[in-house]
Image (tube, rainbow, N blue to C red; front, side, top):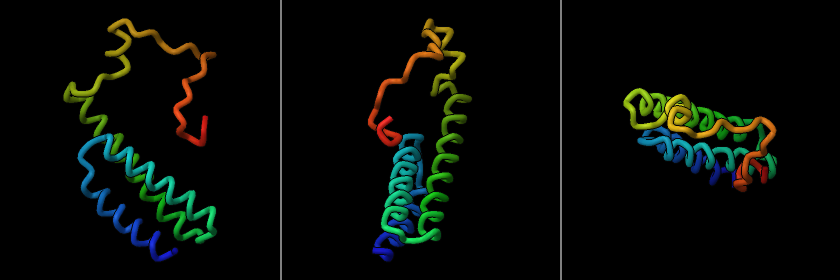
Length: 105
């Protein structure tokens, strides 16, 4: 089982190098988070957990870079752009809709 996770994490490192969109980065970050949780639950040790967590963080950083680039190029709306178009700002007391992600929140 440890070898299988190690191979999957190696594949994830290759995917990290090939990320072309923010969606790709988000998918990889989600996979890496799942791998870290799996490693934690089956007690594979800190090395496996840390490896998966590192891949998740790197994917999230790449996603942020891609979003920044898209906003600068005008391909992705900024918060300021969205508010200009009349979208309302979220009420601080209003709960976000449940999406099934983030542990069921």
